[in-house]
Amino acid sequence: MNILEKISQDMSEFSKSEKKVAEVILSNPQSAIHSSIATLAKLSNVSEPTVNRFCRRLDTKGYPDFKLHLAQSLANGTPYVNRHVDEFDGPSEYTNKIFESTMASLEVARQSIDVAMVNRVVDLLTQANKISFFGLGASASVAHDAVNKFFRFNVPIINFEDILMQRMSCMNSTEGDVVIFISHTGRTKSLVDVAHIARTNDATVIGITQADTPLAKECNYVLSLAVPEDTDLYMPMASRIAQLALIDVLATGFTLRRGNKFRENLKRVKDTLRGSRYVKADLPKN
View 1 (cartoon, rainbow, N blue to C red):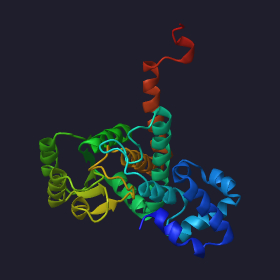
View 2: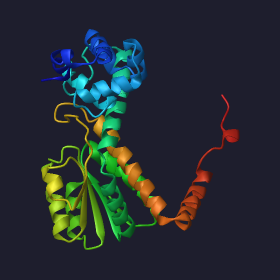
View 3: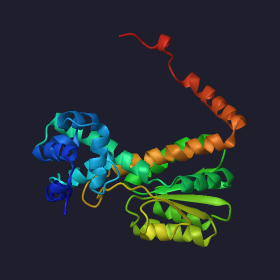
């Protein structure tokens, strides 16, 4: 049963205020997807806590999660593009939909993160002799971003897109090395094979992937993000943004864990880059 059907079926069980919210949503569900909680509350003539209570009555984690379920209840979107975008949407519609759905997905991903696992992974990264970031397809760009973040941290960083190079790198991994595999689906066969090689060679294997997937089973630790995006049918969008945000979380944790002296080193790295950029006063005038 989708969320719209559930709202209709449970209407008699809602409080008077919750019925107001339900009626506004049922009258224009497409508009509700792109409304903030404050806007929906105002349209329903109720408080924001009432909207949140209504969402939780429907077994969702809150308003952002509710909007994701609502989006799933509507049209399936345009195959191979985005599940929220209709074929005949104009620039205004598809721009708003992409931003709204991405922000909602990020909020759901944030709520799903195991903070204790983040802390454990940061521990492992700060103690690593060498860190590798591997991903394929859209996740390869996330691995590249991770390299850009961690490269300045004065620890050896490895990254290859070529699967044969990944295999050889993992064959040479050893205890004390950390290898991070990034995959939204966790079902890419070649990446699962490489993760197995890394683990067999005593590296610590970390997956940024969905739980209970073939890749997750090959990992010592898994950072799972609850991003309901079917990348078998649509272009990877929200899942990639969530992965990038998680890389920022790990890089920030790494920096804070290393302390003030380490941050002074980062300052020196930044200082070396200043000469490569124009300052505002030197920018050429039109």
